[in-house]
Length: 263
Image (cartoon, rainbow, N blue to C red):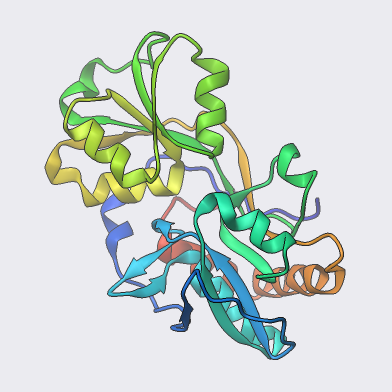
């Protein structure tokens, strides 16, 4: 797939994740609005429930993907317009030509590649776990019959259903619902994307939760396109290659996901 910016989600100073970075583009269109195709704008589909990848801060869409969207739009000479969508509606909206690109922390999977195409990956992520801090000393591995939570319609759900068939599984609409279930002892482990686990573990540390610094899977994050939108995908790949060479890719990622230096 070409050069891949590889990061391993291992021990890092998670407290820094909460630092506020540069604000992303500030135009938000409501989900009910339909924006016709326009060569002067870039319609970016986002699901704003996945900090630090993309989320809302004071009603403004911010995060890693928001910064990428602003930089990509500038590279293309367009104005960025965010279209806020539920996660399950991202691919349908793309296929219906209601958005031009999905920039929402989406993992490349075989199932998704049957419907859409992807840019070159910009980040290597993986599934991680969050537990209650009081359980940290005795946590060795997730029990096959344990109470495990995940976010529905994500690769975390696929992972849990495949490898923990006997677990008492609980699915949540958004990651923060899963964190609350963990705090309230309705589940014992929450599994989700590594960057999100690190961010939320830092945000709710005072509530007695902590991440487990193991990465269970290797997943490639990328941007989604309609198959017939070849020119836009190629331009996005050229943009990625440009910011990779000049160091901007590393800088944006480090701003939102502070990690050890890349391998």
